[in-house]
Image (cartoon, rainbow, N blue to C red; front, side):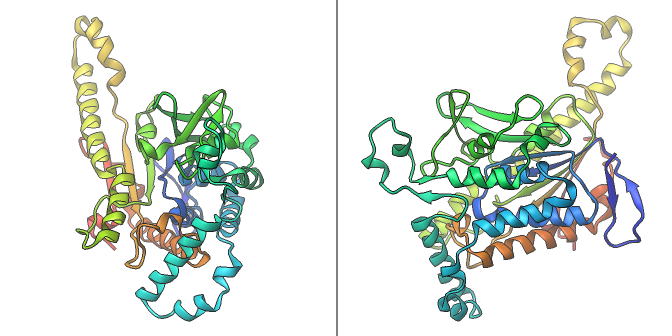
Length: 390
């Protein structure tokens, strides 16, 4: 049973009224530190996920969480994020100290300089540019298909993640990727696969930046090409369970009308990778309402109808499971542009982490977040920004 310790009351323990607590992590590159901050707040509140599911950088954070003992997870997340944002030349430069305190314009210039640095030299312990441009390699060579190589990510994952622990199944673990040859979206799940670093890397292999990752003779790209949010995999999996899901998104589907080409590029990326999370949740509510109605109808049927082939076909879709879906979405600062997902400065990482931590703390102040829904759909969604609660 999952135990929750309320961070604002006495240290009294109470069981959460759900069969499963899920943490659902979207892709978003450098913005993923926001998810680490959210997890830190959940850990402080005593909320431990039974299931972590992620895509791209969400897959990396998921692996660190599932692949470590509860008491070590925040520290290992911190280790990973500090390593990949280590850039002494940039963060210790006089230019940084000169422009950092002077408002949004100066910060926007610094962020762009940092993103350019990542494009040119990569990110420590994560990815590095190829010595020769892809078009200088022969067709068919892996080097001809991407601008960067990710061998450093594999060794980093092996240091911060205990894959034997993931494969014990203590915490269910799922990461999404796309089969390059078939175009099909697949989930690598520790209930059906023996998880290795390659499965996590495949989920984050975004072309043409990163090369496809080979797993058992097939090649895979970033799951965000098709679906950047693994919520559906969690709520639609069988057997269905009463579920408390913390959905942590890095791209907002809602935004302002762009005023220039730079803002067009930013808004395009937000729409592309937000995966229409609220629309998907609304659709799930409708489906769950039908499931509840079907369960009620079948329970009232006489035996002569309940044993028909039609009833047997419908029966697996009928249930009265309940879901609380807690949505936390990173809200970009004014000075962050279309390069925010590959802007790997230490200062931005710390800001993203703090934003995730404070958003989770504010969300957990509302008692209904951890309560079972009692509406007809059996589904409650909570979004601090959308609902306008503090």
